[in-house]
Image 1 (cartoon, rainbow, N blue to C red):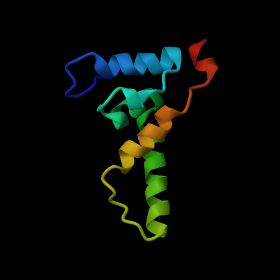
Image 2: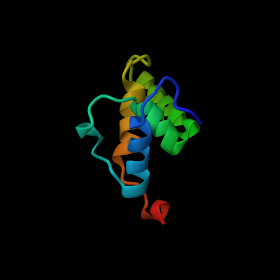
Image 3: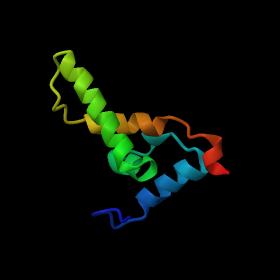
Image 4: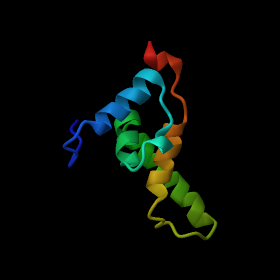
Length: 89
């Protein structure tokens, strides 16, 4: 699966750092496409399903379901969790 519109190696380095070492200090990296990285690591369906579930809850509470940063926030939550050690074996 190619990284669309990303001519550099940064996304690959971030994915490898997460998968191989358990790196989670993404707040130190600066700006990057968190949804793209989370979808690359966890798969499109799990990330998109989580975003949909959060939108539904927020809509039920009366908030706008069109929060522009919601997908990035959910992706950050996925990436902030240390991955299981079994992934690295």
